[in-house]
Length: 370
Image (tube, rainbow, N blue to C red; front, side):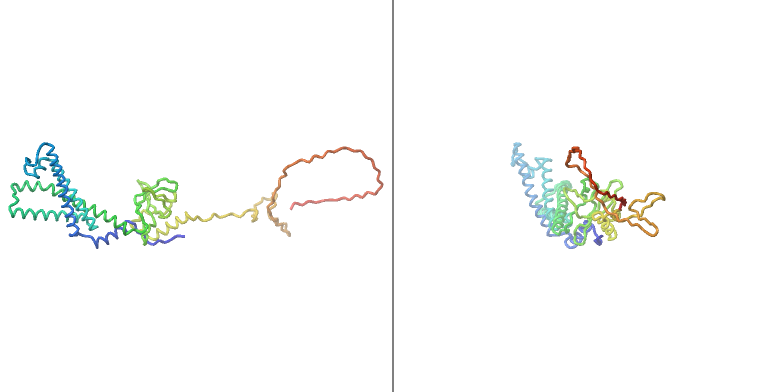
């Protein structure tokens, strides 16, 4: 009997709707999250740059130089290392702001790239404020403003790229945690899984998972073939899942015999669901085969040509009398010799005279087969 599941929606559509509702409530740029990410990035930048400078000092010392003879103090250490020191500084800034943006993205759950940009914005604002204060107090002198601006583009680019990328990674990771915590009923995203028939042979892949109102998986949409694919629906019951593979209790031909589902998108209407459910119900519970009555139990009319001998089971119409044979099964016994009884005969001659009257009767026996 077909079961009407109503209208089913794909698991992707259900999650997208839920994420849209959460985004409307918790999305957007958070000043607190971006500032927290900036603090993480600033602390890690100081830590990484200090480690890089220490490594540079140890390297210069091994080369026979000392801090006192190196021009510019700590700045001179990096300059002394040349391109290697500059690359190390850029990598340090990139990793520091990557982790800072990741912190902001995890805190906001949505719009991670925008909050990562906020981390960079906090850094840029504070850097400009510090530079303005230094210029006002004449503690910073710009001998070549153009060259200084060009030199700052590379570290600023590393900071911007790290912050935005880290924010995107943080929000994506938080969304996965949200999906696991909120749950989707007993539905599992099997999209892309390899489909195996009941004999273990691959015949297609899962393209969509459709769930009911309670969030439980009801049907899978299968894609069979590559050049001219066929799309069919499969019940999400009786499945065996293992390492990206889904084994179904049907053969490939049985799946191909189900109603076409090429036109289904994110929603499956009840009319198609009824047809698909009826089809698979007929496979699981086939109708019993009709049993023909035994010829011995129910007499059947026989076509007999004129002049032919009538079989004993045929009804005979003799005019005033109709012979209806009652047919019964007869067990035929076959004689089996188990032992032999041997009787020996010995001829004996004897003569007797008897005086008596003899009487003889004639008997006639008639045997009728019945």
